[in-house]
Length: 266
Image (tube, rainbow, N blue to C red; front, side, top):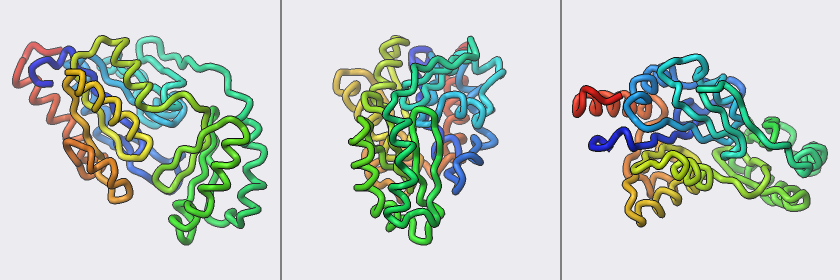
């Protein structure tokens, strides 16, 4: 990547990678140094993409990415790639919400009530998806396991898939994941190398996409924003960093290293 930064895509998850995990997802914000690090790095690489399960517009707002001239080549792929925001246009492009999402949303309160799971759980409305968080429960892991099967059945009835994460279970339309989104974006940009950083189970698909591309000869670096909650990701990573603060420091150091290797980069 230091030898060909102009042909490298930097792809990053949002929650847990650029932003700390917090009990209330609506209070999540990018690490204070994230925009500074990205503005140093983005002009020196082919592109920076944020790939997240959040709606694209929400990630842009919580990340503070809009209106930053140095981030004019930033792309945010929201809802696992179903939505897209490009900094150059400042617009979100998104297809219609599948009807199964609305049907599952209507039934979800009854499912939680039947499982006695109201206390300590929290429903996050995500437009094209619905998420049930258990982090506030007295026993988050027990609540998570108790809801896994009922929510899987609810998702199946309405043509959705259940995506487990760190104390969260998300119901979303099938057909898109971070691996599909990443592979498509790399093909679109013509990237010759990629770095992907993530922290959760949903990032395993992106890890798998990078591993496949590496087998085909495209250089790739896998970074885990370290968490004991998702050892599967750390086991497959080339580099494990201690959360968003360390990820941001790494991105800033990478920008500096590229500049040192080629002062004319960017």
